[in-house]
Image: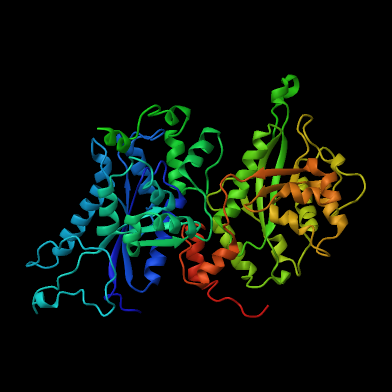
Amino acid sequence: MENLEHRTEVVLLACGSFNPITYMHLRLFELAKDYMNATGEYNVIKGIISPVGDAYKKKGLISAHHRVVMAELAIQTSKWLEVDTWESLHKDWVETAKVLSYHQQRLAAKSSDYSPQASPSPVLPGGKRKRNGDGQDLSEKKPSAPQKKRPPQLKLLCGADFLESFGVPNLWKLEDITTIVENYGLVCITRTGNNAEKFIYESDILWKHRNNIHLVNEWITNDISSTKIRRALRRGQSIRYLVPEPVQQYIEKHSLYSSESEDRNAGCIIAPLLKARQ
Amino acid sequence: MRCASKQDFDAPDKMKCKIPVILLACGSFNPITNMHLRLFEVARDHLHQTGKYQVIEGIISPVNDSYGKKNLAAAKHRVAMVQLALETSSWIRVDQWESEQKEWIETVKVLRHHYSELLRSLPRRKEAPSSRAGSEIPTEDIATPENTAAPELKLLCGADFLKTFQTPNLWKDEHIKEIVEKFGLVCVSRAGHDPKQYIYESAILTHYQHNIHLVKNVVQSDLSATHIRQALYQGKSVKCLLPEKVISYIKEHNLYQEESKST
């Protein structure tokens, strides 16, 4: 059994509508974990699903309550995934950079609990650690006290469409993009690595932090989008084997998706664009 | 499940009897994946939405071990995994007849077997006069309530299956003809294959194209059992690609640990 102690611990955070959550979303986590662990540098210890709040105002977005419940049902049998409601409970929309910041602080607070004398660690910059484990703060180690644990690195898990959304005018603040790729890092699952690579190449800020953007190739196309799920449901078609069974049953029981639900927020401008205008 | 109720005598056209259909899928199922299961759901939805059919059952028939395909796990495992995958399905079941035979059976014979089983399960109006025990029961002797159409058994497959009809010496022409004429195909298209093309390239298929239902699988997926085995050989996660219980079974029985070097 390989000693994982010298590896950088990583927590993957996925933000999104999860409207509804599908096997594709869950696959992103599996692919990312396999990839990061296989580099030999990282040990992925946790995955967090953070459904967006209702204030995002995306068309067809049903209430956060249901989306959270479905995500929880989807990960029932998972040992390392969890759903977090902090973002969805806010009255206003929360920028992704703020969600990352919140979770990084939480992780830091947790790991500082291991040692009484430790203070919360600062946000760690991205980048690779040396393999011979210089991360342990040996100087602070006392024989009788538990060893201070370095907080895990939080990385944003996403698909290529997310990466490319950085290019949509007014959708992102440049400072947020910078924060995300500089202080945290991306694990981006792509179908054809080339588009994502090109996109990174063509962006100065992404290029600068390209070492902090991990591109993971998804060889098996698994095109289960939430949009297609909702469309199938409106047309009375089966969604079995596209989403976990408890999710399918929950959707059926509560008749969650219909033409009416798809019309929610019709004509609304999504929160980040609205905010950019102000 | 009977497709018509007693009051259908004077029923308007839209209440007209639907043809009961059973979908049969043959293949290695080495192992079964969510994609295989999706084929059934997609095919059923398609047939229902034509308004003409009522899909009453789905059957998964794993191939016999003596088919000789590389890296084929033992039939008992493949059957067990399908069984686990179908535990929560209300309409699809696994059938071991094909895998239990002494040797590999041609697809057309599997269809014939299941069709005669199907007919055997229907109520009889009278006993057949001549002794034809054990052989195929002619459709005319089978009692069906007057306004129930005769059930049909269709082969469910992917477009790549349709393509195999072109492989020289793989199929007997008369078998292809029997499959498309007597039974029919429900062919779900996968990314990268154009089933219409395969039909036009074959005289037999073109002739019986009315009995070949082409279904577009909107949720395109490259997911195949081959990919699953590859991932397993490489120690990668296959979560969400197959049912959880199948993944556990594979682990418990140490299946697909190593790619077989021999053919």
